[in-house]
Amino acid sequence: MTFLGIPSGLLLLALAAVAGVSCRGDGGCPRGELCECSDGTDCYLGCGDGDGCDQSCHNTVNCGAVCGDGCSQTCHDTTACTTDCGDDCHVDCHSNNSCGAFCGARCDYACSNVTTCGVRVGPASVVTCTQVSNCTVECNGPCRVQCAGVDNCDVTCLDGTLPLTCGGNELACGSC
Amino acid sequence: MLRRLSLLALGVLATLASARPAVAQYRAHASYARQPGYAFELEPHLVAGLANPPGPGVDQGGGAGLRGSIVVSRDGFIPTVNDSLAIGFGMDALHYRGAYGDYFGTCVSRAPGPAGTSICTDVDTPGGPRNYLFVPLVLQWNFWLTDRWSAFVEPGLDLYFTAHHGGVTPALGIGGRFQLNDVVSLIFRLGWPTATIGISFLL
Image (cartoon, rainbow over all chains, first blue to last red; front, side):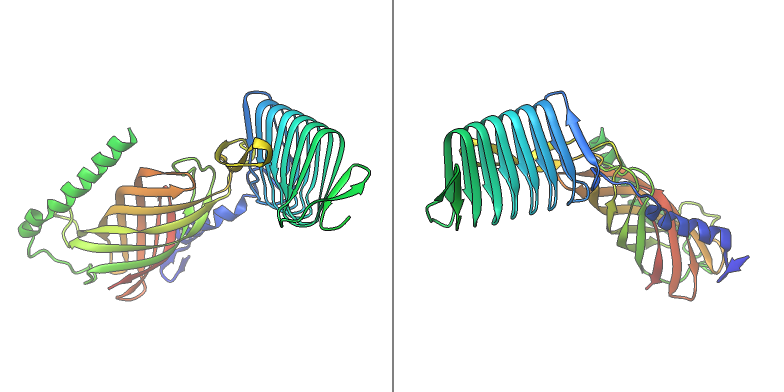
């Protein structure tokens, strides 16, 4: 059988060469599935789908997770753990020497049992520091920071205003 | 090693291109009955990467590209065969989807964070999804089989560019054309790193 004089088998082979690329459903660190890295010296996790990754890193020297929006990240039992996340992220950094983060709007960041916690968050974010020697938070917009068992709770409002003391170990940029 | 291969392939290309005038003189009156009279071939096409690309990417990819081929001789290497030579060049953009299990990468960019922290802001993950740009440079050896069908072999090089990586790799393609008329053909090639299917304009 031919099509425009082309043997149909040859035509199908050529089309399959192009169509074959769409038959694979796999990707890198996938959205919605736990992507875990542990043991060893360095663990650095990206998000293959860009957004929506569930990343976990623990029991290493250095951990780093980079993700877009709507990500969930957990990091514990490391020397240095960092996070770079977009909007609507949930981050739990505990039992580390240091935690550092850039986090976007509506970030929910929990830092506990850590020597140094340094976090920069976007508007409408909540940061919780528990049993932390030095909790340093920079808020790029309205935010709330809760410090419990913290030696030094330092909140900076990047719009130049002074943070408000809201009671109950809570500081805020914008309003309480 | 890669650099040596690249230099060797470039040398072969240059030698093949420069060797043509003597053969052309020898066959000055050969019959070109099956060859369309064209000087340049323009070829927009869809591109598939059917196997792992060079560099850090893995798995298969797809995209689009453009190829141009300049005829350098209407005589090929075989005097008794209706063959011809062209130099092909172009650009192909592909997205490789990556594969499961290769999540872990290296931190390639950091920024100072609050409280003296150094925050990783970009992770290069081998095996993850990647965009590639290929720039092929090939010798196209054509065989004009019938009035409508022709085939070609394309040895050459591909420059490739992807995030944080780039290089040059040997390339090989085998393909064919089906002429719809004197100007327009359907064209396909199978090879590595890319396979294509598209439309050819013989100008």
